[in-house]
Image (cartoon, rainbow, N blue to C red; front, side):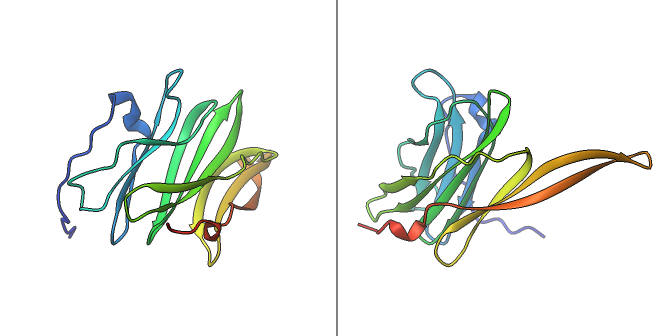
Length: 171
């Protein structure tokens, strides 16, 4: 049986942002991420609450995007967070990420990570924390083979380390 933890309200600038809206909760924070479109607004935004959703910080653009956002992820632990985005840029999936720390005044220290260009078709990616960084596990199709009437994929897993989250220090 699911246990209810409490209701809260969160507002988006427009309904079209709903498809990429994700939440992540730690003991201290509720984080929300989503993508926005538009000439001056295109990117991934973050807003956080330290009071169980009663108040959220003003949205902050944390990642500039170039293409169509296909998937967003956020992982969080203590004051640290990592946001990962898969975006379609001219027909090719690209992976972007940012690491950050929430300061005591609810501002963020953010460090963008290099965009990852992977050879092959990305099926999916997920991000995990390690002791000193965050790592993407990326699954890529190398070859599609028809065998015995079935479609088979020759795959590889690529691990991509983000910029170290320990490079950031809380202020």
